[in-house]
Image (cartoon, rainbow, N blue to C red):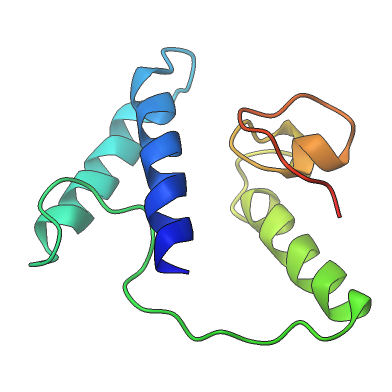
Length: 106
């Protein structure tokens, strides 16, 4: 999990930081940098929460439920009308659209 967090934050933060079309870019960069400054183990930026509490996804139904929850977060926040419209979501890949990073669709 630690390596996945490190790898994805290394990939995603530069994309967000340089995306001139993202209207919330400055706000997101400020949030990520502030979180990094508040963490003694990280002085740059932080995209993920500290620690993790793994839950075994033992059935396809559980996996689909968690994936739908993650994909619907931008909709619930009012950022987009459809999950696949959020530029930084793998929901784009699941809808057959091109995402920012390569995703293996389950």
